[in-house]
Length: 193
Ligand SMILES: Cc1cc2nc3c(=O)[nH]c(=O)nc-3n(C[C@H](O)[C@H](O)[C@H](O)COP(=O)(O)O)c2cc1C
Image (cartoon, rainbow, N blue to C red; front, side, top):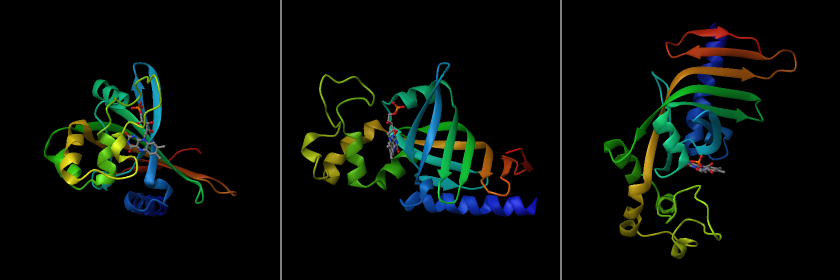
């Protein structure tokens, strides 16, 4: 079991690197939530990782369907794939939403102006539009807001924490794939690939 524990620890290091390193495929992941009985998936950017217990974090627009879905049902799944290393990392998660609280404020304060403008859009994400609109203030398509104006975005900003309930790691090898699961009590066990 120490071999798969080493593999797992290495993947967690890659995951941590993915926060800041946009060339790391773990910089983004697919988040799936439930819209009633229908699954919905979308790409989000990995904004943080914490360990023992393992948690991952992303930011979103409070007005978006994904947040409505996670408010109704906190069960979700996060999927990462590193194509060059042929590793798939799948997490069964529980979402905790940080909106207008100390944690959201701290993350917002460390959010670049360029990213803050994404929360200043006049429309809720996924709303039907009669004509194209980038959903950022039109004055900022080529520039960023100043600090003062960017504060208007905070009302739409939400920081999402995903508590990892179980990890599922698959490493593809031409001479035999390796797959194992890790529970939130750090129990590791092989599963068939
Ligand atoms: C590369 C990439 C990164 C993205 N990052 C985020 C993100 O961090 N947070 C987010 O809410 N949406 C992000 N999006 C947009 C979502 O994939 C999605 O289109 C949007 O949030 C609406 O999702 P919803 O209708 O399911 O709420 C990203 C899209 C791409 C292509």
